Image 1: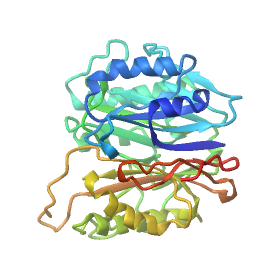
Image 2 (image 1 turned 60 degrees about the vertical axis):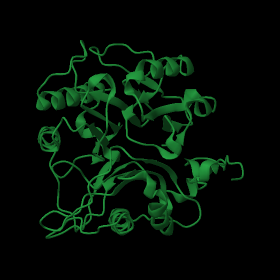
Image 3 (image 1 turned 90 degrees about the horizontal axis):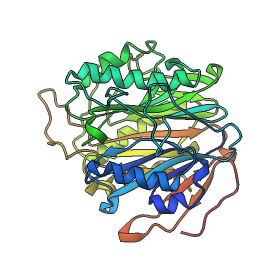
Length: 375
C-alpha cells in the first residue's frame, strides 16, 4: 500500500495540501472537547465530499501549547477509495465511520454510546461493549471481521477501569493473534464518551501476520506487532522489562526510554526489520516538559532521516514513586509503523524550528521522490 504519514500540523496547512487523499486523520484537542461542534464545522468545510475517518481526543498538553494539532495518513492512489457507513450510524458530514482503500480499512473512533441516541450508559462494561460493537459494525459494513484488524487504539478516561476494558476486549479476539494495540488514557472524549476504539484493518487476511519476540508470551489483548502486507504496525511499548519478575524499574524518563527502544527493537528484529524502516512514531509522555530528554535517547536509534512523529501528554503527570515491589509508573510510551521496503521511504520536511522545536520530518512518503523543502 502506498501511504503518506504526516506528523502533527495545523488543520489549515494540511487541508490545503490535498484533502481528497486523506484516509485517516486524528485531531488531538487539549483545552475543551466541548468545542467539538466547531471542529466538525471546520472539517465539513475542508472535506465537503467523502470526509476521512477520524479520531478526536481531549488531552492534557501539546507541543508549543497548541490548542489543536493533527496527524494523518494519506494514500496516493484514489482508485479504490470508498467511505463506509453502518446502517445504524447517525450521518455526520465531518467524518466517515470508515474509509476503505484498495487493501485497508481505516476506522473512526467508535464511542461507548448508543449509536442511535448518543446516550452513554452508566455501566463501564456496557460502554466497552457498545464501542466494540461500533467498531465491528464498521468492519461488517466493509465486508470484514474483527479478525481483519491489524492495529487498535483503545482511548479511555479514568471512568472506565482498564481491567474491565481488557476483559471485554479479549472476548472479541483470538488469543495470541490479537491486533497490535496502543491503549491510551486520555483527559476527555467528545460528547461525554469514556471509551472509544479506532484502528486499521487489512482487507485480505492472507496479508495479515502477527509478530511476537520469543521473550514475549502470547497475550489475550495485544500482539507486539502485526503485518498488513509490507506495513508493520507495532504496539505501544514502555520501559517495561519483559520476562519473569518483569516491570518498570527505571525511575527517569531517559532510562525508561532506553528500555522502550530496546523493546521496540526486539519487535523489529523479529520481523527482520530495523529502525531505519520506521516511517511513523507516536510518543506519549507523562510530562511534555521532558520532550528534550526523550528525544536525546530517541534520536540515537535512527540514522539520517527521522520518521514522522507525533508527541503528546495525554493526562496530568503521575506521582513518580515506586510501589512496594519497586515498580515505577510509565513515564513514556511509543508505538510505531514501519515499511518492509526501505527503498520506498522518503521524507517530506518542513521548517518546524518555531519556539525552539527541533526540526523533524513532517511526513514520510513510502512511494515517491522527496517532496521536502529545506529545513
